[in-house]
Image (tube, rainbow, N blue to C red; front, side, top):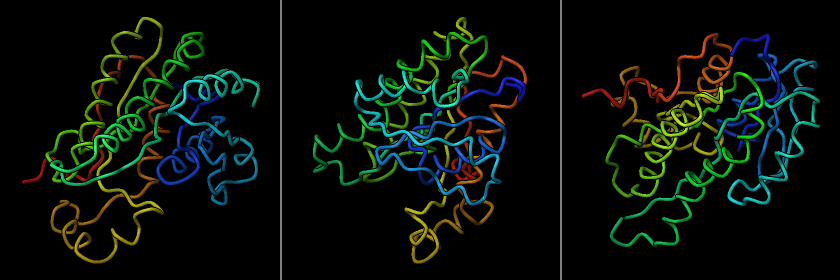
Length: 251
């Protein structure tokens, strides 16, 4: 989507972590950003100049609740007075445990938060996105979608489903002018995992396992998503873009 078509992009889980980085980079690229989160908080805008800070608006929303999502999208166009040209489905959770004893309720909670929410929010966004000639949905998956990871059956399954859902929506909504992409990060540092990634056994493991020898940063994902929104052309859709430093393909 060329920069000249800048409008409003809704980002779920937009207040912290990867979602915050995406929101900030989209604002820097000239888009207005509705930052959806349960807390209704804004990402830290200190890295933005004054003009770009005004492109961020917080919205309280539970992405697993259809009523909350519908009310939110009804209100988004009035935030900035610009049409909705994009959606980033980033919100999610990570629960893990041995598959033999992992509670079904926890499994269903992960699927609801990570997969059903993508469907719920995309459905709510569809009427607004299809009203514009060229729009984009970016779903945030995970490179776990192609791996077998001990004690992570729920998370891996939920992210594999996000990839499948991205492909289906890309095909079904192409004639409505909506493209759908799935960005699948590897190990990316956020405020939630910073300590674990930078000390102890996980740090040592990743230095050996990731070809580059280091994990990614949230800004890496933010810049990629912002770039996708600024790319001209309409032919890139339905793909999963892995951003894992080569870890998922390394022997």
